Length: 362
Image (tube, rainbow, N blue to C red; front, side, top):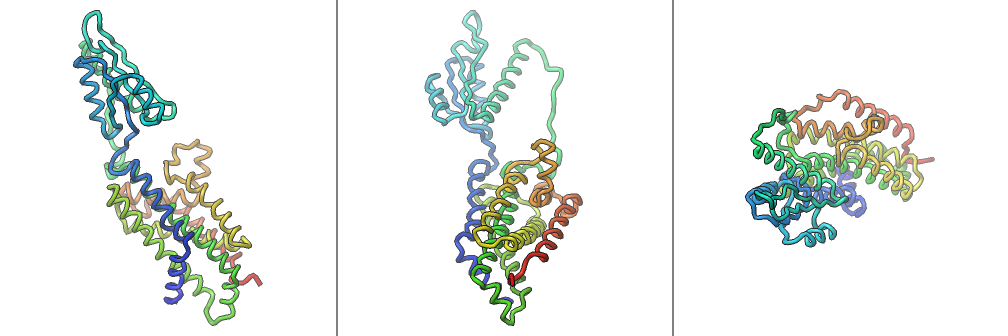
């Protein structure tokens, strides 16, 4: 059994396609999202500032914008056309144009400034409009010598999740995606190739019990999954300052996801006749789930009718449990509904796999 597991691990390392889906593919997403959202930053882009006024008010506004370094970068320009060109070239998402006389007193006083936006950078435009709007509202109160009557305060709904950012959310999603891709893509294609090469048929003529072959395949895949999780967490934490909590419990749920998707991989191998067909079917299964199950964004933002469907996909409850454990300080059994969905999928796929999968088609 041990020799068979080692042999499977060696074949995984030699299989470049499987290695890509299991290690490099999730790492690419980790690095990309890490550069954009890691290190605790939620930067929405670059803002061009053209300050044609030397008033105290304009100076305070520019100073305030520069302090929002966690939201956007500030680039000062000498003219409006230069700012327009930066937006046109995609080097900036918006521009704040402060005209001459803004903040001055007397007849030359100007009370309106302009914000240039790019339709392709709606998030940047919304951020700068919010900051400038709040600044001008506060200034209006000071000028008119009035105080706001109504106001709001903010509070973190779950104190245990305080300090976590969008990259932390995505990193857990990437771990779930890696478990899914490596199991479905790796097992479905490799088992199909074993059948094409008559390896499965030959096993039935040897003293090796068929269940030992299957168990060795499963264990080898789980060992690879542990390596995957370790690499993704190490890169996210050490290079992009991600926050990952309760790693042991996270590992348990992640490996549960791996086992579920291994069953999916075995079932795909059972119902397809070639490795090419298995690869196509595996892709058709994993790609929609990668974008619809909440890997990159919360599925709660979907339309209600669509949410009611995608929340039942196998990856959706797994990601909810993983994030609850790692980001919210929860426990494995805190979400009985999600656990029930996972259990139904595991039992269902196990029964289907037992029904259809055979080492030999004869």
